Image (cartoon, rainbow over all chains, first blue to last red; front, side, top):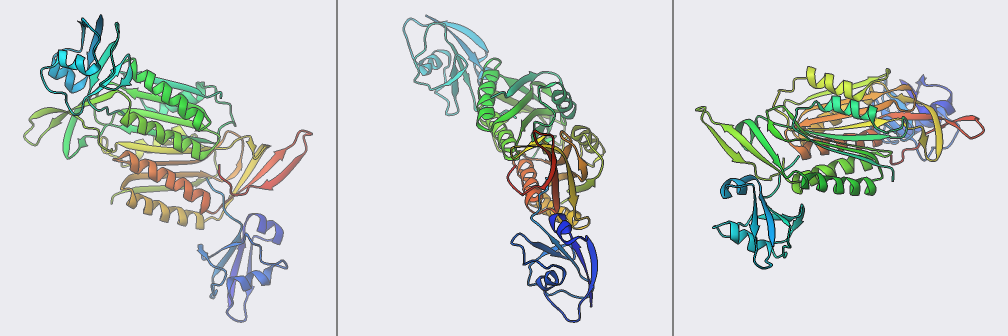
Length: 76
Length: 76
Length: 153
Length: 153
């Protein structure tokens, strides 16, 4: 299966991309996706969304999902 | 001594005046002033001010004071 | 504390957004100094407590109202570290859709501006010496008047 | 519930008072229907956490931001029985004194409008997918950038 990974703010800068498609041979969690794209440990301030909804890191991803990683938000 | 009595809103309409000077032969309280100008019992919703500051009904009035009677306020 | 406080009791109709644009422009607010502006506009509805309202007369205790508002505005400005606080209040004959009151609080910080704006509205409702008399119209087109009780709204 | 909700994320600068005048004019708000409008304007300061700020870039997660804001706006509109709720938020390059966000809530009642306005601001700060990167200037005129932490303000 294939998922799209999006990154924002500081994580975009650290990882060096803002969007990439990755192939997953078997179902994994959001945290597993992070481990595939990053060489660093799981940041304490990592937030994520699946298909533009906030998600927990232990959520299983599905084919076609858009997985986003970002730091704490700061609107307004 | 002489004080000025002001009235507002419903009390102005009931009492039929908005401003009047009255002569007081001796010092009395704000409640005493009400008894001089009104034939009705002390209304439960009566508020008063002395010299444009909220006051209690047992406050003694002084020569030259402006005594105001009004119902609960309603700005905004 | 360099907070500026402006209180105005006005007979004439006003447009709150024009007043805000003008005030912000003409005030001593330095560009880049404020992070937050919270405002409240109270307007006259054509209904109240289940009745149709045709017009309203807003009476106040001139002199006492201004004194109360300035004292409370200065206390709020100090407590919330405001930069500016504007209060504009109509009196006289008011028609539905007219703006009755405008409160605006400028501050470096969001919470301060929001708290000050709400604090001034609560004070206006509960302490400021205004009274409202409504002219009501019932279904048979007969007209009567009533003083408005101080209820939430 | 006939509340109208308008969410806009905008690259261009805006004047909050002009936007409010225009929106109130063009909206479906009936004259005499609302008794209260509470608004909040967030503006960019030229200082933050003790540093001088020259400019800021506001990034967001297009698609997710709008979805979050619409869902929360509709929940607030229902909870507070609003007539209208407007949210306008800048993104892109922002300079000191620019308006960043405008929230306006119209309701029949004062408390409802104030609560909804504050509720939307709290949501924007804590949940909406925006991030801010500041360009700071120190006394020696050297320039550096930093991502803004989510702190009160």
